[in-house]
Length: 112
Image 1 (cartoon, helix red, strand yellow):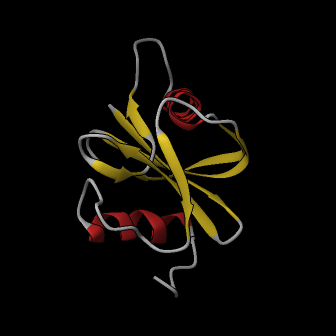
Image 2 (cartoon, one colour):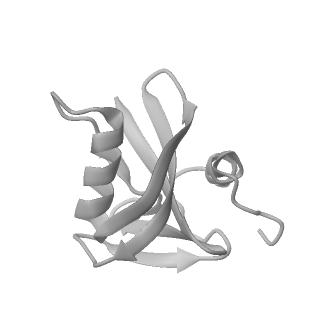
């Protein structure tokens, strides 16, 4: 099982930069004995030092669960990260997929 998280704060969303793949929403594998929500929080903490005010499941596929969360604070982690108001170039997956995650999260995409 894989988790993907759409972290946002105000009118911006956060993405991390995978050195090999490009910009993506934080996420990763659910470890044994871990719930998907615990994995989502752990991955965000490891990758960018994100702590959440709230986190909720927004979409579920066969082997992927997508969460959205309101960022409380960001302390930095293992990967480069940035807040965006628009999808950046160099995404690690198709733009349509990233837009679907944003729309499902309730993020206002009128400027994207």
